[in-house]
Length: 259
Image (cartoon, rainbow, N blue to C red):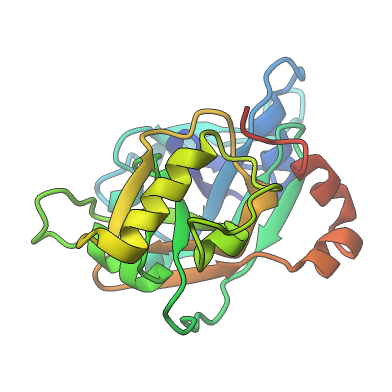
């Protein structure tokens, strides 16, 4: 019998049981069985031993079975609401990044070491909210602030990536930004300038919602998931790795851009 997998999808948020291996699931989930739907996907593989009364795991046994024609069951939805907040970080395995034409990149957990302070950051949040946020805080510190229940506005758990801003990280007013694809660069410069010189807040909203896709080609450092008690880092390959070891995925990922 084929192995059963648990996947935590972030776009959209869902817990899904499947008999497909991660790469095949990524292709199916991003493109669809008849290649008529396209869209990036990001998902974690969840520890198959994870169980919680919050989810109807009996459906995994009842419905995630080989089909009469011998095909594996591709997806059984167990939940589509508040999934991330009900699965602990410790139960999350590898992270998978899928392009809009179904190519999948696997990222294992890495050891996180914060960089020295002094530069500004730009974060794209994926779940449970989807804004773009500029910050003076390094990723772990940023995650702690966003998930702090003592703050009026917070979330219980957060998944996000850091985006490259080049020279604007140290000189938001005059730094070169010719290769940055973000909309309204003047606004981004203003936000970063305020953070560096005037604003008392450690973070500031740049875009309320990123609607145009996942900016894989602008990822710097990697992806992060965390809350007040646990934090995990998934290192994004460097340019040499992307151009050689992951060339097919990288060529596909570079197509995505903000309009």
